[in-house]
Length: 316
Image 1 (cartoon, rainbow, N blue to C red):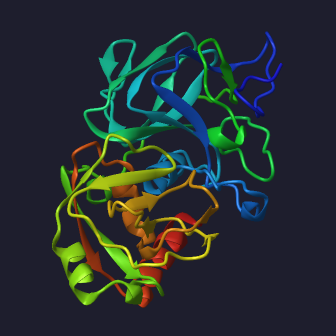
Image 2: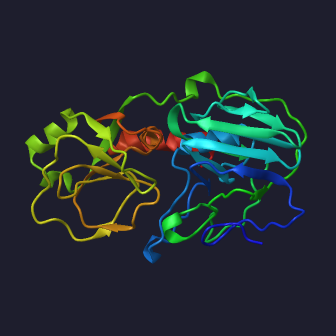
Image 3: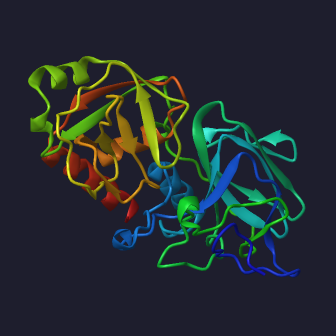
């Protein structure tokens, strides 16, 4: 059978072994690096919101970086091993427990058949990433295993699902070096590459934008993060609808910025002040409601350099 909401990617039967979902939590989806090349068909890219945490989860297990992981939003999920497995957990701290014993975060660990993994409510950050050795055995759709609910593509994890995975013998646990572990603070600075439309905003408006403290709105999701703060007065006349880049800062009529993310619409007609540096997006994607946001400019050259370094390190 296919287990999914929409178009599924897991083919399972009564003999399937892997990780059984006892409790799916608030929102648990299957994600990889994303689905590219289909924006012209109106399909969003999807993919792991916190790319850094996703990449580390796979790296801890020596998996290829594009192996699917479980993105567990907010927490309150639990799973049971149907065979011996090696897993890794990164991202938001959900006080993970294996058979009631704390196992820590940003590390790999083994699960024996019958053991239960429990994730509590996220304490810092919003999204945790759970990877399994050799990856969850998902069937790609249009070149990706990513879930985009608005496109009805992918697997919305549900209670009773068995996520197929290969049995694996116990291996020594590995941890992410402390200097690479994100702590998801209550106040963050995001660096902005100004767009070709930035010149349509007045100098006073741009100066105020960089001086303002914004707050993350509770009305945020995988499509985008809405911010609350001093209004950015948009230029008159608007713009013709055009493609939207990941991390674009869109200014609607009310002047409250929206940062567009993985499940964004493919076209938009509001002016875009700039784009957030790709390596800064994981912090935003983990920002809880009321997190304080400030912006600072960054050159395209510097943003490109840091992104290339990230891609080289993780073989993205």
